[in-house]
Every structure is written in C-alpha cells, then in structure tokens.
Length: 190
Image: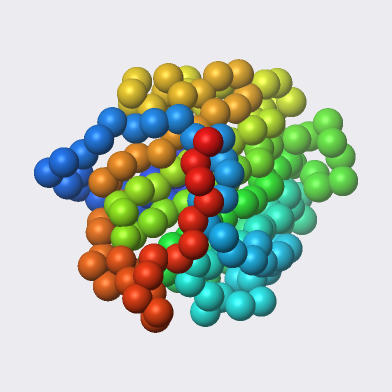
C-alpha cells in the first residue's frame, strides 16, 4: 500500500489546478500550523467536535490487517473522514498507519508511518509530512515513491520528510474571514 501516502497527500492537497501565482513547494516539519484543539478520534470516523473550523484531529489507523478485515473497516471509515474535513476552511490531521496480514503478528507488518497533513483554504496552502515510514519493516524513502514529482521528492529522505504547497489548494474567499472577521490564530512556521 505504498500508494497510500501519495493518495492521502493528493486527497489532502485537494488536487487542484495551480493558481496563476504558484510558489514552489517548501519544506515542512509537520507542526500544526493552527492554534486549535487536537481532537482524539481513535479508530473512529471523526473527532468529538467535527463542526470545529479549524478542525484538527488525530486518527489511529494502525488496524489495517487482512486476516480479520481491519483493512475493510478502515476503508469503510475514510469517506466519513473525508466528508468531515472537505468543507472546512482550515484542517490539520495527525495519523498513525499500519498495515499487516495478521493484526497481532508483528512479523506480518506490510507498511507503517506517522503522518501530518493540513490545508488552509484562505491562503491556498497545503502540506504533507511523514516519519517512521517503512515497508515490510524496512525504512523507505517516501520521495522515491512512483509518481512523486522531483520538486516534492527532494523534501524527503529515509523514513521521513514533508513539504508545503503554496497556492495549489483552491482559495475560498469566505475562508479568509472567520466569524469574528479574522483568520484563525496560526502558529509561526519554523
């Protein structure tokens, strides 16, 4: 399921046509860019307050096993997770992935990583970051995944890395203002 990272990144970044003034991607360390409560969703489809915007949520996706149908359950929850995130102006996700043939047998692990993803529809930014990326228990460079553009691949190395795209997420003018007339509080990027 190597393609999982690429598919997740594409979904999070909303695969939009570039805007006229697209800036090149920059590196990202995975820090949450928003000041928000990180809601714990566990294995569920949403955090306890999916109406929040910014919507910041952490998922446990480490039960993607074949023998007991864990991967089927995981796949059945992804549409609800996407539906909760898509309408938001500001979204940050932290998650923990693991696939295996048999859930309780570590020797059957097929892939694993921890990821952070975000989008900001006010600025047109989106990011993906992974760490502990491994395939069949061996550290793997996400930048070497098939189809990874070289301008993005340069931000990865063995087992980790990430980048932010600029002006590639569709900007929503209504997102530039929150209910009190300001963008949500943001953390300074390091």
